[in-house]
Amino acid sequence: MSAPLADQIENLLPQTQCTKCGYPACRPYAEAVANGEASYNQCPPGGAEGVARLANLLGKPVIALNPANGPERPRPVALIDEALCIGCTLCIQACPVDAIVGAAKLMHTVVPSLCTGCDLCVAPCPVDCIAMVDVTGANTGWDAWSQQQADDARDRHDFHGMRLKREKEENDARLAAKATAKLQALEAEAAASPEDLAEQARKKAIVQAAIERARLKKEQMAAAAAGTGENHE
Image (cartoon, rainbow, N blue to C red; front, top):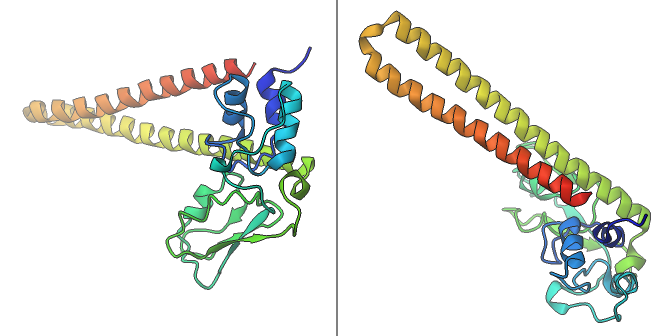
């Protein structure tokens, strides 16, 4: 049984996760192409070879790369000027494959072998200390990238997404625990000082409302995740 069309398209993309196609990552672009919502010539990192690969899969003619999405070019790697870096972590947050290491208020650096050349770290930098340096000479598109590099980049991007999801869940759990503890403290306060019931009831209602909002948001996220999983099957 052949894989779904979106999976086959995604397998032909370079997995730089650069958003130049107009979508937030390679997977959404693959789904858009499969659904007929996007053309197969919107991936600059794949270049002309990438367009040809997708055209062959889709049974369509080879067409030129859409210039609106950017030019085919040699693969760049981000380079941080360590003397200018202020340790703001904005580039770390922007990197879709966790290729930048560092900590708040400390110098950051790029791991060249992990960088996909997506450019996404450049714009957020408040001190303009990141440069994109070509590392593949005259080789562009798929000639500047390998299938193994693409596969590795996809794995890192998937891990990046799972890490962010886990960190958010852990933070939400901490906030929920604090809200529950606050509610318990208010209930204990009400039991100890019944003369101020109106004010205590108001505070309790605020905390209960916050807990309920967090519960509903968690259910919505779970439902959305379940829907995404169904779409990938």
